[in-house]
Length: 238
Image (spheres, rainbow, N blue to C red):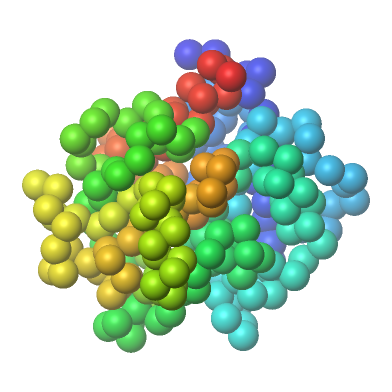
């Protein structure tokens, strides 16, 4: 596998803590060329990158609301321009929260129903296979990935939910091992078991579970790797 010509940018804020995980997976597992973008780097744009990842963590200590301060960082203006120009953007956990706070994705994140930090493996059902993030996922498969969040309870108004459903913008839902979408399989109270959504053009996706923590057999699951594999496949076939 040689994907060295595929360049990924990983946005890093004070408090990011999954940046090195994403870096290692992209460079060592998928043989891509990933590099860090510090939020204060003096760069004009992100055009040299084939895709951008906003990793998990606790940007700015999650003060105010999770992702609220990071969303107002100058680097996010570059991410907005990149996304609006069709660039592929993946937000993982805190990255998802940041994308919601910037308005690149619709809805908000509330505190988990349990009022506790939830850290465990969950199962995901894929609802849309026709995106840059899911095109390599086997149909009818159930993916196993870990979550680690306190504010992962996705909420949106009925109008936003209807619009997401109409445009197949709900990409992943929490389910059980057999793929059944049930209340019991919902780890945080997220509306309609939503675990991941995309924008209207499917080039921006936010996901609460961590694919970078489940991309190698030694970690107990390689299912998260399908997301990175999908992105690479999509870029190569464009």
